[in-house]
Length: 298
Image (cartoon, rainbow, N blue to C red; front, side):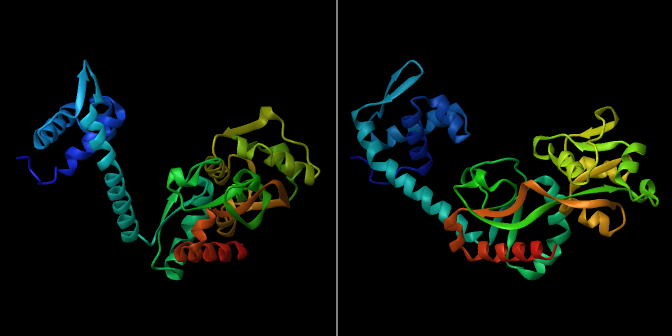
């Protein structure tokens, strides 16, 4: 008489993985276990059921008639177990949100405000992600993004403008020393460039608005990231055109001085973005309200 005791879940997951992959090796990779562990689980399951479930030809395995019927019966049930487990884990961490923003914004805007957020919403557990460019939030596990860019690239999401983007010229007090003319500074010191696609128009936009020539490339210092360029500016290495929000604290603390007139950046703005369905989540709304308030105070 065959046993009526349910088979171990481990064996069932191994069975479904092999059935869908057609290979024990691929199934082992999917389950992050060894080939022998999968093979042993299948052998244990077939022994438990008292019959074979696969036809084996070399390294390939295919479901036999009994295996196909068994797969149709248990695969939906295992999927339901997976969904229930995922939901339970989500409920356990219901106050956890993943917020994405570019690294420069995380360093110069987010980190100085962590204490304020903790006072405003002590219940929230916010994790920071620093993915660059456009991406699928659901695939990356991101709940909310503060976008510094073009809203047209995020048409599948709810987007709310937070603020315009201002470009400013900054230099260290040691370099400025009473010089309030950008042209004079650029004649005397190198121009610092953040040489990535998201920053490629910064100097051109600022120089055109301030009636200043774009610096000679031969006298530039180039860095891959804005964070590196800001560091170079605070270390007296040259003059930098960047986004006001990135250097706001450095200017307030006297590490950098603003020179010339600020310029609205036509290529980028700041937006709050999330899936429309996320707006039903009270935690998302709470974080959105705080972010909106902080940008208003800028």
